[in-house]
Structure formats: C-alpha cells, structure tokens
Image (cartoon, rainbow, N blue to C red; front, side, top):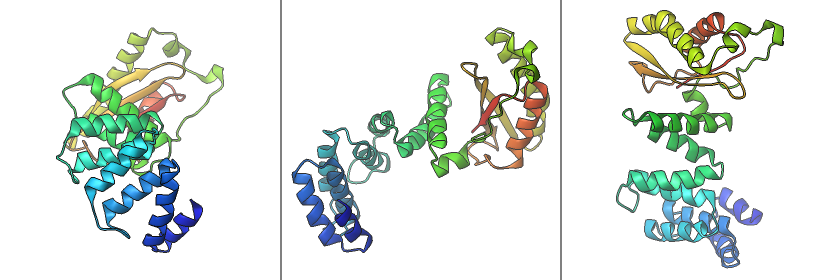
Length: 244
C-alpha cells in the first residue's frame, strides 16, 4: 500500500493503479477506494464515474467510510449519477457513523439548511460540531467556540444558575440573548437563535446565526467573541458556547 501511495504522490498513476488493483483482489478495501478515485479523476485510467462508483460499492461491502463518503459526494454533486440529496444524506450518515469528519461536515451543512425542521437542525449542529472537534478545518471555521472550554473551581461557578431546572436555565439564557445579543445583531441585519441548551455533563449553549449573519463563517470573528463575552458575564464563565 505504501509503495502504491508513493507512486501516486510521484504522479506515476499507472503504477499506483496496478499495485492497488492487486491489493484490491486480495480484499484490501482502501485499495478499492483508491482505484475508484483514480477512475473518478481520470488519473492513470480513462475517466469513468460508473467504474468509480462500482469500486466504491465494492469497498462498501467492507464498511469502508471513505467509500460511503465518496458515493455520497457523487449523488450530492451529480457526478455520473442523477443528483439525489436523500441518497447523499444516507451515505454521509453511514460514513459519519465511522467518525469520518468530512461526512460529518457535509451532512451537518445539509441538515442545517432545513430551517423548517427543528430536530434536523439539532442533528445538523451535532454533525457539524463533531466535525469541528475532530479538526476538520472548514467545520472549525464555520462554528465558533471550539477549544474555548474553561474549568472553574466549584466555588467560582454560578451555583444559583446551576441549581435551576433545565427549562429555567434555558429561559434565562434566552432572555440574555433577547435582551443583550439580538439587538446588536439586528442593527446590522443579522440575528441569532437559541437552538439548544445541554447540561449533561456540562452546560452547553448552541446557537444559529440568522439574517445577514446566516451562512457566514463567523467562528473567529469579533461577532462570536462579543456573544461569548456577554453570555459568560451574565450566566457563568464555565459554559461552552457554540454558534454556527
């Protein structure tokens, strides 16, 4: 496998293809995926999306996450097949179940586009957050709050807030957002929505940007920092705040 990869990096695609084909005949599922990619890109072989898909499907019999991911991309982008977002989503979910960060990222974006379904929005946020925490660069740019967890001694935590029932905690957070965050964003045509509050094992606030902010990569901007500073000062410093 390493020799074939070395050939590939040297752009000796024909040699890489021959080695991967031999390995694939011995049941190497990653070699099957690599051959599928060669056919998809037309590297060392004639470009052939149908053959590419066949190789990915062979690798899927071994539950190879990259195979699921690449077929999902084909359906999402109509590469050699008719565009089918439902099938793309199914394949992305299979890849994500094995921790594939790219699948988590793309599935997250697909579900976050479903503004009419709260449950799908929550699922989409979960997938996107998983991708970001796994180090996916585009996911990390899309969602604010990664790597910002703070642990305080118990005596410095807001015990009054923490002693409240979950619904009261959510109401307090919603009130803080409505009174201190939303007005600032609305002035510039933006908005923000409280999606979910989790308090097991730690308190975690998940929010979605709206208006002119929707779809923007605001993870590393002053907008996120402003929101975070307001909420930690009003609620508790030891909370995780994520906004996408």
